[in-house]
Length: 461
Image (cartoon, rainbow, N blue to C red):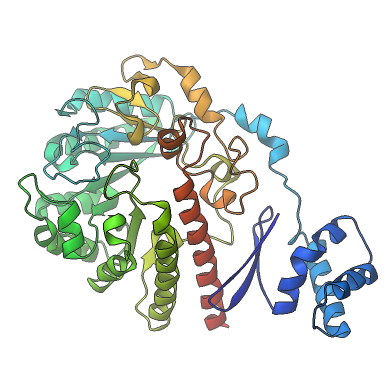
């Protein structure tokens, strides 16, 4: 499968199955889609030249011949028109042994903000407000260790609601996790997601010592943030969190954190929010589209897509300009590794929800991920009895890009790995479905990310 597109003056060709990306001139760009059937049927270069001439191209014969030779060389090197080697292994992939390697601990089903788009209903997750006890957290970490096989590195995210509302238990569980490491030959990588309202110097000192990553929730410009992330009394939260977040970023040397925002129908010019965060000094930024029912006034709609596509293009160009000026920053959705990239399992199945990654409620129930919490159809078990609904885990194990009809012929499938199972379920009623608006935005982000790579490579050369 080959995907060809133009962006910012670059002719870009992606060979989907090999992962090869080529920046080519106009003649090669025009010939690549035309010659694919001929190359696969092993036609001669002379036959390909005749085929090209019949298209009425204005290129000279010598130019066409050189371009055809270049294309054939790429095909011979398995960098163009390559066959799909993954689908042949999908049956063995489905039955592969998996181990649990990450937990999302819902340390607090409560929150001190009232974010309008919150899928967790101000931390309640369609249920009741509650705090995770130390005992439940212990059981969760014990379960992770016992079900992680030979894997050494384990991940635990303290999530909410707002985790800082149950901070002492967070600290106690980190200490407990550390006590398990040497005995079981494990290494915990703890992360913290916070809205920052309760953040103080003592918490920051602990986080900098123990947390491998810190996620800081902020939507961008003051008017955007305060509209969507107010206190329960209606007052905004921007002014109180920004100085704290800047301190976090600087204290962590601008690494091992990111500011994470959500854009909605109300701020379709979201690139301004990204750049606002960059202008505040943040170097690690993620601003993502809201996922909401069409009935919500802030939901992204089909008619919003042209504007959003333009925003991604404008953001990509500005990022290139700033990088060249020595004031670049990372934007999570434009971070693509064209050298190695994720392993095959990640490329095919994504985040591993329901198999390698589980969410744990304050009372110890297991769900495939935080977005399924509260949906009893996806209750997997609990920290006391373990996984009791293995058939649900098996369904998630079989969730991959070849099980999703809309993914099979998509050029971005090995970059997004089929997208979010929760979003697919919420919009199609099945985890192997696809959230169409999310898919279209993901494709655009992939195209922009690769264009940025091309532009910066040009600069280096």
